[in-house]
Length: 323
Image (cartoon, rainbow, N blue to C red):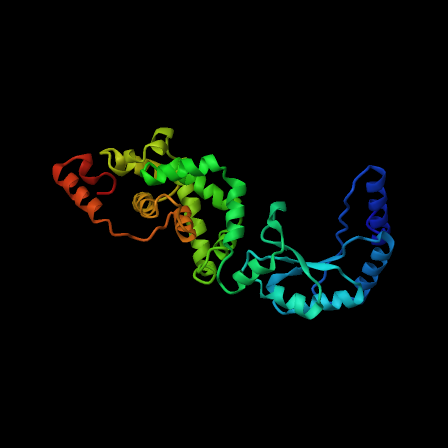
């Protein structure tokens, strides 16, 4: 129809084409504004009168805070909307605008956006949003996201490997991939109780960068090294292997040593936690730390004593890599 065509005519032609071809749903995405514009409002009114939509939804940026509520009320008064969609909930905002939108405009929020992909458009649940706003997380949504990506069989298999400390680099890669599929790290963190305000954006970015570095190092390993971490952690050839892996990933040797150390601590902690909880799974914070490869130092006296004995005995090249 050309760039000079009236948006009203374009919308009407699209709806008619959908009817002719048997489609049962049509989304008419109109021009957007952050401020009220008389010309835009007139265009929206004419489109609405022409296509007679079942739903008229206003997409609101959660980052605008209280402005989101006044914007919703203004659009409702000028055009008449049936509800709102709150986007960018994976950013800094906890979603306080959600309370304002309902209170000021009287219109319900029907969907929320937590990312750039289609699955990231989710139904709005007031009780879950209230938990996020209060910093209590949203465990139900977190579990639903995880369940959509991992089968029960895979989860049971992973749990067993955590309990007997046979968790390898392939498993680590699967976990980081799982977190990535669930959305941004910031968005996932907000669902974990107590984590919403605990990590700043700079810290989140740091963890995401670390995840990418760790992934690059794992991709630089051989299949045998991925499946058998002891080749890098305790074997006498560990140091030369880590040097090769770090070089292949374009990283300094020290980064490789740090990753191996964190991986070993993480694996030990996961095994201990699983046994303490009777194999009931780990909490959100531990999942986040595991995926980021940044588990804090832990005291495992038995492991340290064993390591000292091995070192005295001269096995494994004096403790494996970097020792």
